[in-house]
Length: 179
Image 1 (spheres, rainbow, N blue to C red):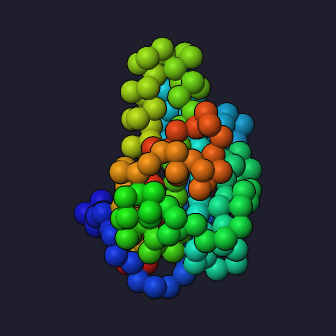
Image 2 (image 1 turned 180 degrees about the vertical axis):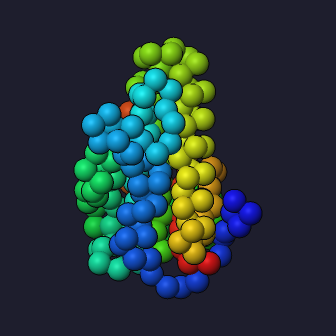
């Protein structure tokens, strides 16, 4: 935790597939396959978060946009091509978003939690995304990687770039790269 920092400048090298897999698992992976529990706490185990990955430089993984499936610990490709610069543009031109080797985008389906907790569920979703992001930060430190949480972006642009359904709301963009 002493080494955790928000990193906005990355070395040019690619990430490895095992590193990316570990970051995705840290964000929302399952810790008990039978119970379905995840690495980040979730109010009432409603699990409102969805995790996407924009790949630019990852060994053995083609450029494109992927959706993470926690239960299978697998990626589903949603589109081809490097979208990191488009994400940087959607993030008000924040250079770090385009320069990370990969970019995690954490989104929420508010209804999953709000149907149980009403309007207060929105607060719980925001807490949960913070837990998931901190897991990514800390896991990144152990792997010699850096990241930063970016919250300033145009939701509709990010949703379109990442091929998210309309019911999902992007909450965080997290570029990741070597320190």
